[in-house]
Length: 405
Image 1 (cartoon, rainbow, N blue to C red):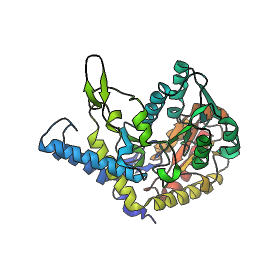
Image 2 (cartoon, rainbow, N blue to C red):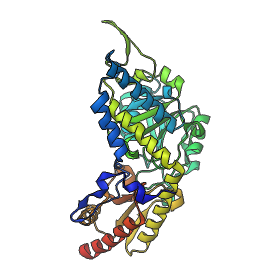
Image 3 (spheres, rainbow, N blue to C red):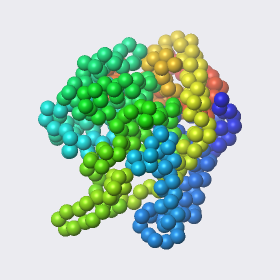
Image 4 (cartoon, rainbow, N blue to C red):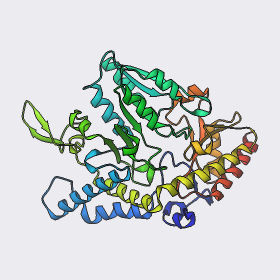
């Protein structure tokens, strides 16, 4: 089990007071706070090893190269992948764009189809939507069942031999729903489609084993799992990395350049144009180390218990509408509305009590329309959150109801 009191000591920001109240951070689905171990790792890189990776022959350049390479190995191992299969990106969004643009201009055209779900984050919807206009392929969507779950039967009906790519979020950033990705991957593969999994919310919260999952691509971000901003990762099968054209061009990813043609380095360098964010990669690896020390089974169990406790609390407050499935079918994300009070007003009142949540459409406007709402308030939990903080949320919500009617 996770010792929350011990864990909290590693996070300097949690010692803050907001509006004179203890700081309660419940916006982890947007970004997580950083432990001192990650902060120190990034600072140490800049203090003692700062050099541009693959752009020098000095001692510190060699150190930076080794640290960057070791970071890739550590992050790849976190999802049970080999380092050769892991491309560092800015974030999940860039990782998905890399796949979408590369496939759109090498494997997709008129008559082809891409299948997505209606609970996708904009990052796994807008790139396909816009590229479909350029390349002439069609984007199809699978809807939701009751309680915010996806229908495998509808996937069976929607995916066909015309489907070239299936894009699916592993865990919804709004509903918290953990989707049956292995079954969806099997459906896609039966029809010869490649399957991209958005792991932005799942990788921080549950065990993700790419070999057991069987996906062709997996995208996730460092900043949602205790790491720095500006660093993410894309796993892809080796043969795909070999075949796919680069998404970005420039220094670092080239083998040879002539005035009329160029050739590329082997993957993953082929997809990492420009000076890499080595400091953030080192911080990402340190975050992975921190989570592995806690144990991902313990992380998942802690989130599950806290989520059930919070759901029981919210159900006890009259007038609150909760979206998504039961606790055992979701990660630590709860989207809700309080009567007819605007979510932004709820968030503002909670902030006065030192509690940070998110309010709005959560970069999932089509899902909001599917649910028939403009947005929600959203509380999301992580390894440093406690039952006492859920109790504080309850007290602040009751006060918000009284204040806002």
